[in-house]
Length: 98
Length: 98
Length: 98
Length: 98
Image (tube, rainbow over all chains, first blue to last red; front, side, top):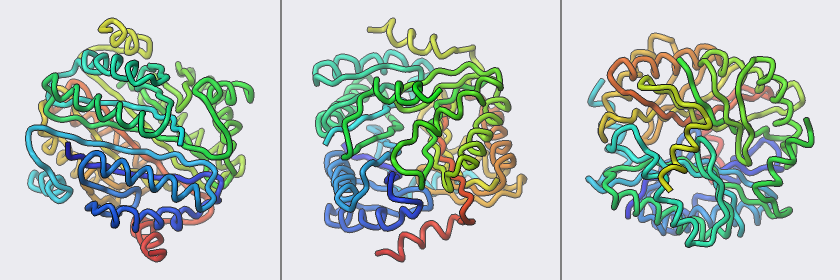
């Protein structure tokens, strides 16, 4: 089952500058072979369910290992059986209606 | 790694009555041995990371098998290394400050 | 337009203990005359759109005034025109399918 | 109070093709003078709190008027008092750590 995820990881107890923690997820997503794209309030990821959620778990583990005692993450998770849909498709399907 | 999740599964393309689909998740969570609690806009689940996310995947698969062509899910996911925290603890830690 | 909201406010830059900040929202919701209910990963609120979002804004302002330099909030927002639905209804409509 | 929002509106009871409903939000955001940017799982919006939430309410009203009997929306809402931050800043602050 393919999945598209919008991932927003918030480490707590590390002050207000979260970007070093978010940046630490990049090599994890890359080494998992996932397709992803950063936006201003999260990271879009697409791939097979198990690969995507293993990578998200690895991100939590890495951020805890960097010293964050607590993490709260918000995820949107989309699956569909009627057809494939990529990150690029979803944007253009809206833009085509403008 | 233990995790607390707030899960809100929204099947699309099945009309406005979503409760039969949500109800189908109950036996999945129970047979996974997870502790969970329903609220009006989601289901709180606690357990080990892999068990929780396997169950959520099984919920998506079950709801697609019931005929929903598309699902969009919102998740909040909390982990912490400083101490254990249960669903009941989190509510009482706020109520103690009132 | 009536709305049901699931509100999860996360103050950043204040350490890992967030409950004093969450507790500060109680008098705001009460004085706005809103119906609400705490759960382990958020607060369910129902009321008229403008009243609910004015109260959420007041919560952000109060938490900043308590010293939190940054806040990230996750909201689920439900509206429907086909019928009224209360916090209690939504839980029982699922439980009736078990 | 300035706010950055990540808005994901899901109309229910209208089938699986949601893009016409999402596209209907564009003129609302534009006529409100808000700065916004579409991504594959939502729309980033920045502006003053009241202007942003008035526009989101107008989006719900417009989508109901198009025939959707029920809407469930997921929002992330960021405010900060320590400094200004734009949509572009947030992406580059992560990219600078790679």
